[in-house]
Length: 374
Ligand SMILES: *Cc1c(COP(=O)(O)O)cnc(C)c1O
Image (cartoon, rainbow, N blue to C red):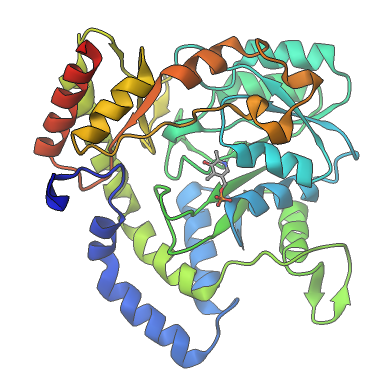
């Protein structure tokens, strides 16, 4: 297979080509100024991204996992308090909870959209009086059902923190990901819809006290040099990343629209295909298709066949959090999260990025159709 015929899972080079000039100019400005941390590029990006999400404040962080930890720490929850998280998520969601000195309380997801299931949350809240917060994950580019989740959290007097790492620009009932909870965290990992050229993340919040706490904690607990008001650590967005993120943010609405068009093309190509279950969108959601994941039987064989055909399909995620050795424990016993476990064996992520062509998608669909028939 010649290199050019391969279809990657994501094509970061194609995205870079669109912003290359702006990034070069911006980076030259930063290097000339030697203002590598903080400064005008970071301030401007924080303002622009907050406006984009319809939230009062955005505070940059070193990465998405730190951002989630900072958001949780800023709420000053009781040590060891439970945080309800979906079992079907990237491991970072749960890492941040543990690092913040809190206790993950995993719940299963719904079988249709694989998002946090409000009924499972209700059961967890009734069962566990030590729950201190609810942490929905906007998986694959669409929001978890925020209406029912906020209602449940409010009824128990609990704050909601959103993991919006996979949903930059996604909306539900017209309201953006990151604008629903007391705070939200997002990641600008290079492969995310809004990706930096290295690690970066941010906290979004409408709450001034949370903003102040996050800003301080991510900068050694300090507002004024050498005065450390509270315990903190070092997790800051740097100016070189802010340049990239500003250039890409300007394209994000168009890129998300291109992702939506590509997802619709896959939907049409796969409609009625035997043995392939396409992804579902929750009513009311404007999806931004961070990942387009179908479900198939004998997934690993299908994946091997696609790779042999030069198609960079992936799996998100092959082993759920509760089955990872790092998180083994009584609450993570096999069989407790049947939807998540079953999906982990069936999920298959197809190549999708704003610049993917119809011809590429046709090839993916044909190869997939063949692979599931073997
Ligand atoms: C990417 C991601 C994170 C963590 O982001 P990093 O920037 O890699 O630390 C957290 N949660 C979810 C759901 C993610 O996809």
